[in-house]
Amino acid sequence: MTPDRHDGLEASMDAWEELVTSALLGTDRRPPALSVARAADGGAPVALLDAAALHTVRRRAGLRPGPAAPAPEPAPEDHRRPLPEAARHRLGMLLAGRAAPTPSGGRRGAAPDLAELLPQWLAAANEHGYRAPASALPALLDAARARTDLRPQALALAGPRGLWLAGLNPDWKFALRGAASGAALPDPADGEAVRALWEEGLFAERVALLAAVRAEDPAAALSLLRGGWAAERAEDRLMFLDSLRAGLSDADEEFLEEALSDRSRNVRSTAAELLAALPGSALAGRMADRATSCVSLDRTDGGATIVVEAPHECDAGMQRDGVVATPPAGRGERSWWLGKLVDSAPLSCWRERFGGRSPEEIVALPVADDWAGELHAAWCRAAVRQRDADWSRALLGSPATPPATGPGTSSLAERAQLLSTLPDGERARWVASFIAAHGLSEAFQLLGVCTVPWPEPLGGAVIDALDIARDAGSYPWSFSGVMGLAERCLSPDAAPQLESLTALTTEPEDASPGAGGYWSEAFQRLVSTLRLRSQMMTELSPGPNCPGA
Image (cartoon, rainbow, N blue to C red; front, top):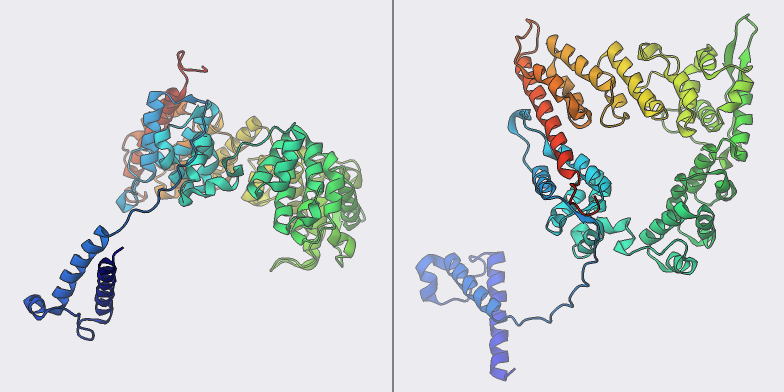
C-alpha cells in the first residue's frame, strides 16, 4: 500500500469515528466536522446522516475479500428409502403448520391441528424406515429445536445427514449431544475400537457407545464401566449408571453394590434404586428385613389389623442403602424413612409376613393409626418399580369404585403409574370401565398411559362420555384437553360413528352459553383430524414399486 493510500485510509477511519462520536453524544454537544454549506441545508443532524451514508458506502467498497473457508466434508450417505411423493408433501405441510399462528379468540376452529399430528407422522415414517428429504432437513431440525418431545423421532428421520447439517449450525448443536457427534459407532464386537472410543471419545460418544455395547454384551458394558470408574466425574458416573436401567439384571448387582459406597450421593441413590428393582438382590433382602420389622399384623381385637412402627432413626446402614436421612420439606422423618424402606422391599416378602394372604387381601386389611396412606403409597411405588401386575391390580381395585374410597390409592397419578404395569388390553378395559362409572373429568391422566390408537372398548367409552357431556350442556371448554387427546389417540375408524355428533343441537336451558356451537365445532375438528390421520398413514404405506417394500 502506497503512503498516500495509507494516509487516505486512516483519514477515512478517523472521519467515521468522528461521526460515531457525534451521533452518540448529539450534534448539539459534539457538532460534526462538516462544511458550513452542507450543515446549513438541513442542520447538523441531517448533515450527519448524509455524511454517515456516504462513509458507509465508502467503507463497504473498500473491504478486501477474506480467505476462503475450507469446504466442509461431504454429507454421509443415507441408504434408507425415500419418502413417497405424497408423504413428502405432507411432511412439508406439517412442518409449515407447526409454525402457524394460533387462531385469535381462543377457539381452534374445525381444522385439524397440524402441529399435534407431526409426532405421529414422524413415528410412522420411522417405523417404515424412510429417510427425510434433504430439502426438509432445516425445517425438521428447527422443529426439533423448538419441541423437545419431537427430538428423538425427528433426529431419527433426519439420520446421518441431519447430524452432519447440525454440525454446521450452532442453533442445532442440541442434535449432537446424544448422538455421538454424528460419528458412526464401532461394532460392539470390535473390542479394540470400542476400547479406543471409550477412552478417547467425547462424553456423548461414550454414552451412545455404552448403550450399544450393553445391548449386545452386558458383561462387556460392565467391564467398560469398571475401567477408570473412580476417575470419572460425578455427573458422568450418574449418567453411565442410569444407562443400566435398560436390560437391568442380577448380573449388575455386584457393580451396583460397589456403587453404594460412591462418594456422590446422587450416584449412591441411583444405585440403590436400581438394586431395589431387583427383588433377589442383597439390598432388597436388607430392605425386606427392615420393612417387615416395622409393619406387622395385630389380631388382639379378634380381627386382623396392620400396625406400623416407623423407624426412630436413619442409621448408617440405611443411608448406605439409599435412604436419605433428611426428608423433603413438609414430610416427617419417620414416615419418610418408612416409605423408603417399604418401597425398596420386594413385594414377595409381604405374603409371608401376612400369613400367606394375596395382594388383594393384604391391601384390603385395615391399617391402624392413619398409616394407610403412607403404606399404600409405598406399595404403589414398589409395584411400579418391580413391574408387579398382581400388586398393581390389588392397589387399583375395581374401576367402578370411587377413587376416594379405592382400596390402595386415591391419587390419579399413582393409578396411572400402576396401570402402566398391566397388559395393554387389560389397561384399556380398566380405563373404559372407569370412564363409564365416573365420566371423563378424572380420566385424563389415565388415558395418557393407554396404547395408541385406543382399542375397544376404550374408544367407544370416550365417545359415549363426550356425547353425554354434550347432551347435558356441560361447560365445553373443560373437555378441551380430552378432545385434544382424542384427536391424537382415537382410532381413525371411529370417524363414521362421530359424524352424527357434528350437528348443531338445541342447547338445554341450563347449558353454558354457546356450548352447542363449541361442541359441534369440536366434533367437526375431531372427525376431520381422524380422517387426516387415516390419509397420512395411507400416504406412508410403501407401494408395490417402492424400494424395500
